[in-house]
Amino acid sequence: MSMSPVQEPETSASLSDLYVQSLRGITEGQIVKGRVIALTSKEALVDIGFKSEGSIDLMEFSDAKNLKVGDEVDVLVESIEDEQGMVLLSKHKADRQKGWDRIISQFKEGDIIDGKPARKVKGGLMVDIGMEAFMPASLASFKGYTNLDSLVGQTLKFIILKISRARKNIVVSHRDYLIRQKDHQRQRLIETLTVGERRTGTVKNLTEFGAFIDLGGVDGLLHIGDISWGRVAHPSDILAIGQQIDVAVLAIDRQTNKISLGLKQLLPSPWEHADTKYPVGQKVQGKVVNLVPYGAFIEVEPGIEGLVHVSELSWSKRVTNPSELLRVGQEVEAIVLAVDAKNQRLSLGIRQATGDPWVMAKDKYAPGTKVVGRVRQLTDYGGFIEMEDGLEGMLHNADISWTRRINHPSEVLKKNKTVEVVVLTCEPDNHRITLGMKQLIEDPWPQLIKQFSIGSAVEGVVTKVAGFGLFVEIAPDVEALMHLSELELGSNEKIDERYPVGSKVIAQVIKLDEVERKIGLSNKNLPPQT
Image (cartoon, rainbow, N blue to C red; front, side, top):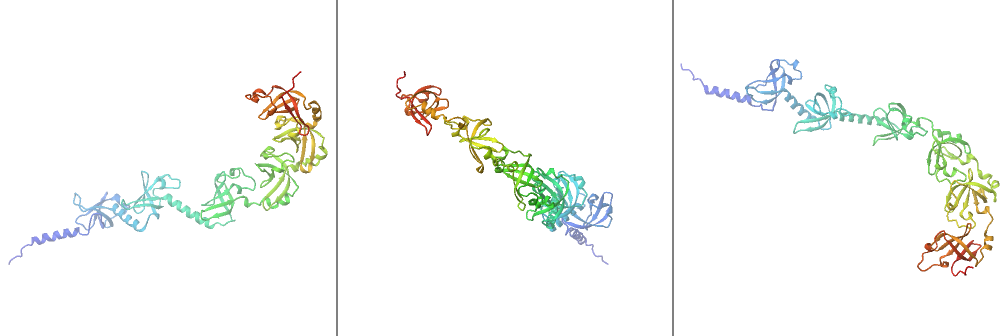
């Protein structure tokens, strides 16, 4: 009986085929299912149906304590065969790859994702979102950098800021999530607000122009003008940060999410009964709270201010600015001239409260009455003389001197000095009094005409040099003009060098005009002096 020969080549071929087949379907970088076949204190031996098993460090398992033989796990094949002939596997990298695949298939930049900060690293935290993502420390909270250790282990929500497919990196932000939530909360709250309703809020911040009130997730502006019916210098005079107050919603801009609030609107307006409380003609007391070029604002009670126009400050003084008579904080009396409660306007007069001095002026200051007054103001055409409080008269340049030409009252008058004058006219209806100074003495012209007749010789002192001639004082306060054409002057001589101020000259009267009150002189062709 013959035996069939042993087919060694076939056997060798079969083992080779089995080896090749065992390699089919498994490539490096592939995630495959494996089974735990053994456990040590440090490692898990995992069978993936390959010619050899692979070992995985227990630290790669998040639940290593509950791991047991027979458990199925997903692993990533790092290498088909290492130096010991074993396949190199990684549970951690498999989890990361699965997490990455899940995230890029289900999420995009800007989406919200749950995660748990796992560990602190330089510059921020590594967050477990199914794979490890990085969160910079500045994006951990509203206030920026916070205690990162306190966040580790907490389940939080994050916004995916950036996905880098090339590097398989993801950057997340908890701060952006908080901001988005606050915006949503603000939007929901704004949608519930209605103009006119009453809300309770907390004073969050104070500025020069008002206060910001937190209504529970959204801030509204309480403007300084809406804090009180009275005048408020600064919101801190009435409010304090952290104070809870009730406010009224005045306006809502849903496009800009701006809310205007009011506090005084919760109280009755003091103007409601102002027309009956402050009838025309009533005398009131108040405090000057503001001065403007056109008048003064007087607070008669908190929330009600009246305007005293600059024309209603004095009966006779020409007041150009109320600061000439009043100061902020000053207590004054005034008379109600007009009241418009609907438009919240109150017109007051201060001069009316002291009585009209013009009522008795006609009898008290009849023409010819001599008065001593104070020079209150100088103008180009004359000076205003205060005769008594509330009454002043006008002293024109032409009524200062009989004989002297006055170009400006400052040549004779000094501000705040007292002078004696005489009343020329008094018109109480027009609030006008004219005064004279020269009328205190007798008109010297009749005597001057006799003294300085045409052709008479005179000696005088040069008081002024002009381009057209000289002014020469020929008697106290009596000036005559010696025109350039009547001057003895050489062709090369200058008038101010030949006739300096203060020099004496001898001349002849050639003109005597009693109507114009002018005297003309000449020093040409003088007769020989004896």
